[in-house]
Length: 116
Length: 111
Image 1 (cartoon, rainbow over the protein chains, first blue to last red):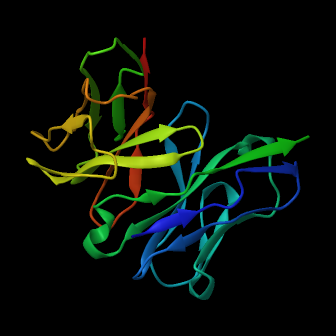
Image 2: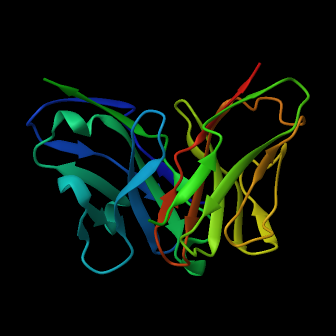
């Protein structure tokens, strides 16, 4: 069965500092990998996704993520965070077979706090 | 603009009642999904549907039911058999092989 682990429940970063959110997945085949962001009481917004090809993917809002097959990781990074980045971040994995239509498996999320 | 509409935004249920959460999309997506979100638990899949008139149970389907009579609509009924229904419910849709688009959610509270 597929699974996603986000080891950090909370992360606090100073505004302007760099950010890395960790994500490790377990999946038997080549996975579809996603990062989503959620503001309080809202739905999820897709930041970026990895399906194949270049292992460094660029997303919206200045985020990027790197797929490392050997480490089963898909960590999210941003070189300089802004106060508006404070939110909940979710990593997710889906099955390549069937195009992911059988649902994504989500990690439990990392709550990002930005210090002024 | 295309998107997913969930209604209502807030819903209150009495003990023993069934309630239905609405999810409508105008993205022409084939697949639709329902997730439940609890604090610190991430999102858990309740049901999903890849085509009209067909749907599959997810990880936590007990106490829930769905229908997919139209491509655009995927309503979720929380039945009285669901013993702990208070949660935030998210609907999503996707094209096969594509990313997921989420609605803004419905917060269900048992009173």
